[in-house]
Length: 537
Image 1: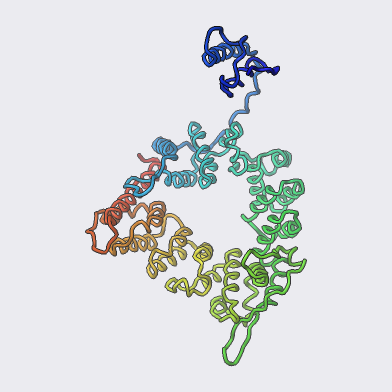
Image 2: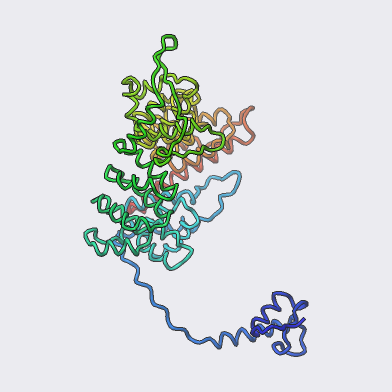
């Protein structure tokens, strides 16, 4: 078969190479005579490659990019700069399966290093920016800290590589912001800037003049993409105030369902808003007290019988998920959106703790308490969170608010850091570590001393009991990242291999020894990292 098209000589050679010379014979005019077709094809390709390259005409030079912006933050100390290069070089190293050995996992230390460097206000060395952006592209959990560390120079560099375009939609652009009193520069950045720059500009304006910020957002709101409207709206969580109510009320009529839902959620976090008042009236009509003579005082529930247009306009989703009843689904949405301040007056002047302790008739208790949990998280109400969590020693299955550890974690996040750590420490002391993993994840890092001690003691007890060691690997990983590095010395005694017990898992002693050795070496390295960032080393 020979070529019969009007293709160029180079295209004919490429076609023959792709199809194979047994199916497409190279044109005889292009190949040297006397050679087999495959060899002739390769010779012809080599000849035409040189000819094509030699025939290229010089193109007009592209415009040079604008210079990278100045970064006024202080430079890293030399030891810290070397440490960062090491962490970035090892970021893609596989962690491996099975036993992890005794060496620290550097991939898990990079997020902590970035957080510590950002706390100290250091700038990223220009030479590491490409590797830093590659790391952030590969790991979404790194992006907030990595992009804050990269700063305006990182955004400048990201414009030059399509693989880093993620940075242009979520980076930290504070250093590139104009003076907020320069109306022309503010307007130009809002109209032409990257999404990250626009979000940062909005946040900066909100911190000083909420009305101006909302006016700026409203000026382009109708023309923004739905996903951008959602992210702009989500950025209003920071510094949310009554000044945002009018704008959020308008967003309840947005054409995007996700935008409407977010607007409703934000309005429910403003207890004094008209939206919260409407939800309070609806929820209160569904929940009341029954002071029966025999059973005592109980809470009774009459869930909504329909989801009318006004409810849907206020963000109530009419269609429940599969497996949920309509009435319970509507009730939950009303209660979680109503201000918690409505319930003491509605339920006999009782405190949150007293209300949560009341029995609920007709098996509505779980639904009502779960909705109160969501309301406490949304409104950041510590008093209600304490009531719904109950005493740490109470078994989770019989707790006053929710049996879900995920919901308990969210409730804990509304408490002050010290109280949160103390609650989890006492929970671990009462119930061990098997149900504490999610709760530990919301505690401030490094863990407070009582919490760290309770975790180590529980691990030591599990080891001495001959427990299956791999079931505690998740907690061990958390301890490596969250324990105070000062705990390393106290842990050294646990690194010895214990005597094997008859009923212990085979090899458990060696695993526990390795795990504690890795924990000690990781804590020691974390201490060294902080010292390097402080200028030591």
